[in-house]
Length: 251
Image 1 (cartoon, rainbow, N blue to C red):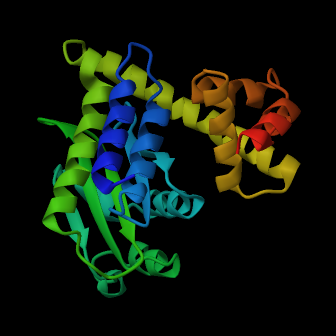
Image 2 (image 1 turned 135 degrees about the horizontal axis):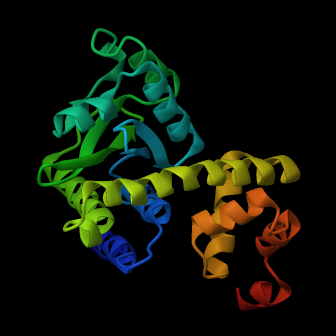
């Protein structure tokens, strides 16, 4: 698949989410993974604001990126917070020299293996609902064509979240976002249960969880809630990740 085809494929995946009951977390996971697949970043994380305008981690392309986003929130400093508060992109091309700007986040990002960062607000006109963080292993800028592509992807995701609520009261919009934020808790619980049962890392556990949700044609958040509640047996989810004999014959 050429890069142009990949760009189209990711935009189509995002557009496919534009249904009445779309899953925000799955949409944002497509966005985070898509940025990595397009080589816009080596890792990506996404924060959304809750009804009190407190940012929460909603999606990440890897566990390393998710933990770094959590660290950013715990210390109340970093590029995503700046992008969200200002509504403008934030770039730092050499995180090794960012200690004056972000005394806690900068060294932690370098320790996690990242050399530069580019944060993009998730916004629609004057409404800012979160931010997309793009991490690169090397200390390098994001060139303008790729920065424009990243902004376009972020804009599509923002429109998808806000599309059917633009004419509603802000409390309704906050309600949908709050539901997604609550769903994220269930997803982390389900990931932890899968990781503990199978002795795998959290990234692998999330892939299994997401595959089961897609194979069963259910929302990721709904499946995670059922797993956390014990309604869906862990063994059923785990077994779904093992290729069947017919799968091997088809390869």
